[in-house]
Image (cartoon, rainbow, N blue to C red; front, side, top):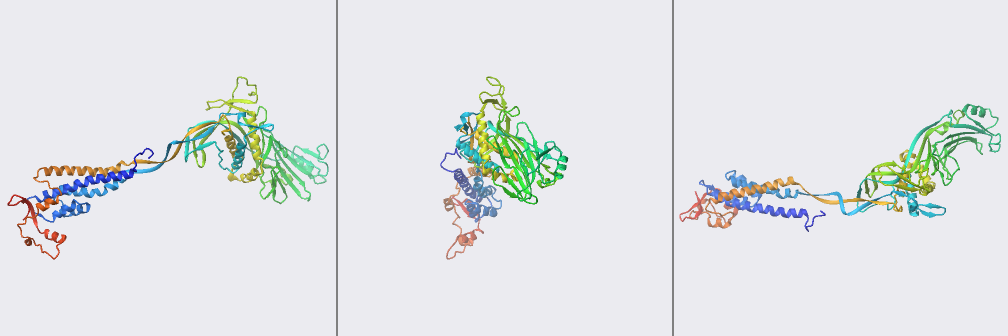
Length: 591
């Protein structure tokens, strides 16, 4: 419809053309039937006079045509064909109205467009100076915090100005861009009593808590610990420490303690992580400490936040560190996490025979700059939808002034498969990504939302890190990054299309063709006659019933008011033929 330039709608135009076509067919039909009635009465055999009325009604419309077919019953074959075509014309307009179909479908709109943002570089030009550091611009940091809060509960997030679409849908070609990828792996951990990653200890709480004094004893196996604890002359503080080191990740540390509280009640604590070792390059997410008394509810703690009482003792938290150094850390990585979630019941560890035995899932995640390939990308009011995202790791580019550790003045150059451009980024940018995402993740709002995240319906730590990576990707691809470029897309919107249903043309075309054949046959038959009266009323007046006959002899009994029905009743018994009278004029003569 966008290219329809006429001031009239297509359906209205079809209706007008249909009316003109129907009238163009019906008028010749009426004239031909009128002409054939004279031919009909010219036959040698006498014909009922009321058939004259049947012919006249047949020329007036479908109802008269049906009456004509019933009365004539095949005695006028050609005229019957015309009557049949007249009846057929009842379907002319309904069929022509079905020829045009209007439907709405999404199509490319030439006057609109859309865009998504892609980036090839992430260096200092994308940051703003702050006290002793470079930071992400404030408006982007605010959006980053909002995105992280929403990602905890799997809310879709689109950073302002990263995408744009002027219509209800925009589609884009496949493209690649610098992004943030999270790579994670899960490992089942079973810290049984003979685990080589753990040791036991006992401490006399009445003495100073110093390992230098002889009040703390270490044991490498459970049997020695058990024997010492059971044979002690007083109640001691029990402890089990487990540590598993993974190159490039925070060490997995788990501490379980049993001691007497100030109320002289047996208290237990289970702690994951490095405890209070918090700083700009280290932080804890989730509930990293469980505390409970024998037979009571569990108390959950996370860093310095308030505790919460619950009947379900599940420890679930992450230790996260920043950029780090060393050969085991990929050059494009900026965040590393070790997360743990208990799977066994902590109460099973209370007895000395199973003290400290626990199982769970250890998750290690690393966030790095990468290249992502986006396929089948669409923008709708719901958000940014990508059917397939492929993570492509960066490859360090050697040569030039690069040093042995692949960098020059904290700047890195890299390439990636399926990316036909060089990638450059700075250490400061990676540190800013970690530091400012850590600010958001340390907040009490995130802590409160992480409680809901722990339920299975919201996902696992793997999903959580991937959602955070999605938010950080939008930071890298934000227009505040000078290297960001717009990828144009096609804007789609509702457009009215006209479809011609050609099969519906069959019936109207047949009616026109049949009427044309009928007209030609009538013309041929009439060309052999000395008259061409067609449907003229003057012919009836001039060549009417011969007046030499006595009207009363016809059986016509005049009443006070003669009607059409009186004439029809009388004419049924009158047999006439069209022939010349004594004066040589054509007349309907009674036989």
